Image 1: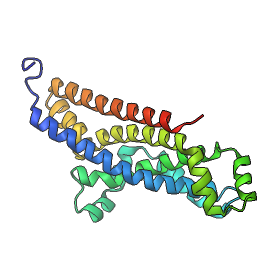
Image 2 (image 1 turned 90 degrees about the horizontal axis):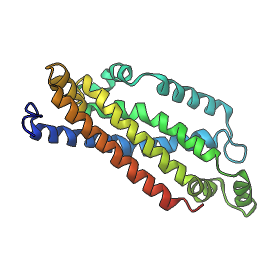
Image 3 (image 1 turned 135 degrees about the horizontal axis):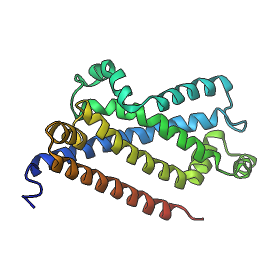
Image 4 (image 1 turned 135 degrees about the vertical axis):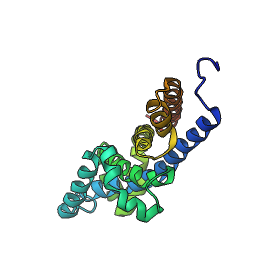
Length: 221
């Protein structure tokens, strides 16, 4: 074992794994809340039965499309001034979180919007005919009906966030990506790259398995 991975400092590897989980976890929680709100706003302002507003929808959709289209590595660099103001630094795991959120929330928001569109409009009309308010339709009908797709969407987004953390590592974001690039690639220590990659894959597989289990439990169809 030590012969194959002689350059690997397992304590450092463990610390950087925790940093990757920290970035993914914090960014994932904020992304879930922000993305859910974005998706609900996109859906509600484009739906006649709710709060249709073409101007608001067009503006929000425009910004969502912009942030979804910018490559993440470029987005991190563009957000350096904002990151400096928010976190006081542009280096480290905490400093990477604002860019992770801004990169992932619009992506997840669009997935939430698509999930809500899949809800049968007949169900919405039935709730309205029984006297449900628009807000009640949203949290008692739309969200419960779309919940399996919403959970599936956050699973996909979390997997993407793990990949984003690896890219953030290239510009000093910390985590396994940073370790693989600085100690592995730049110092030509391939064993570090292999171990870091395997750990990232394990994290991704665990997220996917948990997400799949939750979707199966929630989906009553």
